[in-house]
Image (cartoon, rainbow, N blue to C red; front, side):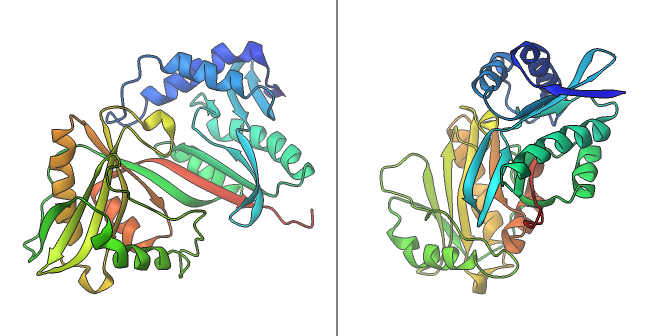
Length: 305
């Protein structure tokens, strides 16, 4: 029988051990993190003042979930988060049941405080957890993906890819990119505007059809939406966009091929990208060329409760 208790300091060592085990079970492309256990211990210690619960079976810690933050206006809602991946984990046996009970307790407290929107991130390989959260009313909002540095099979396209020293050539493209997000079916309002400043870290690749720039891809190193996935040998696709009139021509793949070359020159071992799951054009491209490693899901509870 699963028993739920308030999460406290004594649970941290076993909880960190659970998370490290779950990390090691994921796809082999994840960064090696020799200090992962201590990273998780520190992260959990810093969140001890948040809402948190531990699950026990036969006196053994089998799962935990802690709140990592609250927002007064995320996607227009007061929202409680359990993000960062380290914020929850469980043993494989009875994983779905363990999460049901942990979420029951957490959601009760969140809704009692007026936070009717709940957001969690978890490993994409955990199919049982995916279905459990689906049953609990969650739907995906974002995903994070990685790939090795093998070259994609680029189509024969009449574009040339060049390294840009300034963001000025992509000014109009980026305006179109930002206008894309509020449209169906994405319906996403960005909290800030993308910007690439001359002299900033990373590189900006532009794809030209004749004299016209029709697509771009911005790359950065040692950065990820989920910090545990960031490392010195990880290259992030920070932003990318192709003019709608030039899609389906292999331009994105040509940019990705040059991105792989740049990542290799930087000493990276993998490419990483994060995106909105309802972004049809971008999402379909990333899924084709990358492997999902993290899903972020959201549930909105009836605010009359």
